[in-house]
Length: 250
Ligand code: MF3
Ligand code: CO
Image (cartoon, rainbow, N blue to C red; front, side, top):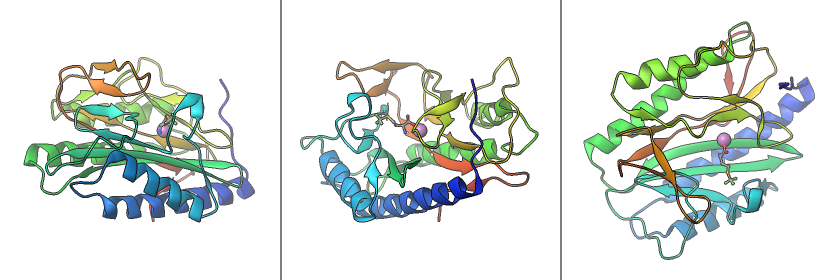
């Protein structure tokens, strides 16, 4: 395993890839409403990405048929957009999106409520988002990769939620998925030493119930085994010798 260290020029391109994706996510978040199909969410996301002169990196990735992953309620990640899947009041919807700018990838995910949602659903969304921030407090040169994993686990476990184990975060740069893999749960080993210039996609996927998931027959959609709600929050970050820089937030 080798983790790439980005040059100053590469970091500039990653920043721009991230900034554009942050804008795309803000627009998508504003567009979400009851009655919208998950296909419409994908079509809007692809249009926004292309309007910025970028390319959706998920489209055709290992055969994935869309630009945005749209995962509703008990769907954890990789929900395939469909004209027949209509968002309704009270749903929660996880949007995972990524793009390529001048050869450099960004990747980020958000979970939104559709209209008014239950307080339980809102709490799951909030804890999932906060777990990302707890994790990246450890993302600093000289710490170890799994310090991030442990910090996420420590925070989330206090709420009794299940941390998805079958899917993990990843390095990112000239490819969507680079070394290292970034688990969201405690590890036995310390993991690689973090260095300034590493770019990482940290992405906790948290279930209101158990951590176990099933993979549906479409080859993509991942759902909670117990049918509980699931939330996802992801940003592409840059490791520095101080606070990490979050590239996919404005
Ligand atoms: N953001 C996800 C990831 O980090 C989605 C990629 S899967 C795709 O792996 F096929 F949809 F591209
Ligand atoms: Co990712």
